[in-house]
Length: 194
Image (cartoon, rainbow, N blue to C red; front, side):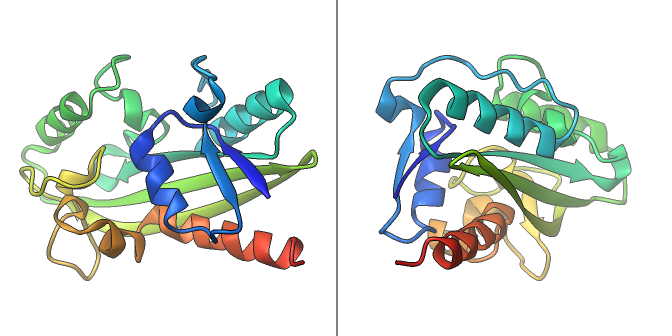
């Protein structure tokens, strides 16, 4: 089955491709020459995931999925949350977002945080949501060169290194996106078993 993933982010596409069965043909927006920016105007991760999936489904008629992820920091009352990608401005700079986060956490002893992903799937017009959450803490400085986003400053619970210090396989065994994608994969395998 062909699925169109509402993303231009090659890292994210590769991460999800490595998690789903090979029987699913996962394409990104660049693969179908869609270069429009999809507005993320909802105030929740669920709302943004659905907004992106609905936009793509309406434009293409192709079964699709979209996700929205956010870093929720306890000491910052859940910020940056739904605004994680644009935390430091509309340029969506990972470096600037991390700089702002570390500045705002200076002096805070509570560095608990969680990553949350919501995936919206639309197949033949039917919408389904899947959620994945991983708890962890925010470091005081960057560590590691892998991954993207806030990976260099997030240490998952029961681990001693950041996501950015892990291999893709290590990260994919525990990440919020991996947890949500596993739920999605289980659903697809059960629903579309040949």
